[in-house]
Image 1 (cartoon, rainbow, N blue to C red):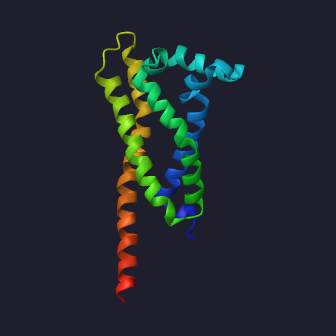
Image 2: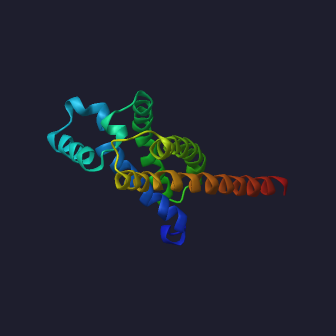
Image 3: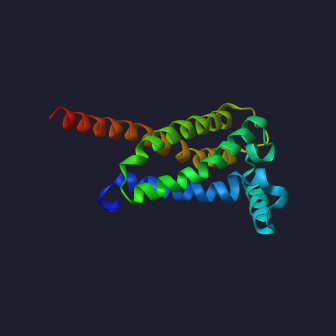
Length: 165
């Protein structure tokens, strides 16, 4: 098993997954459980809305809520992927590819809506800050998608070479 520090992209993915798990539980999926959330999470989410004016959380459009349900379902997968990466397991590459395709697509929708949508209530600096918040959650999964594809191809190629020997 190679050290995580000798696998720089995997290290980035582990940090990303840990940050995404935390953001998913504390902020992103909050609209799904706000009726029974502890006061500290209610305060955290009110603070987020008041300070960043995120239109997805202020207005909570139906399409965005459907993305939040999917994100809630992905939390166990993110935990599995984090553990798999820490163990340098090759079996996580296909689930990572699937996860990355889904998340980069849905986050691209959010980025497009923030950038091109009519959000008069957003100040320019708020829009730019929100774009900077959302962008890594598009870019890292997109890189992971490409990386996972090539790792899977390499694994398949090695397996085929062994089979043909």
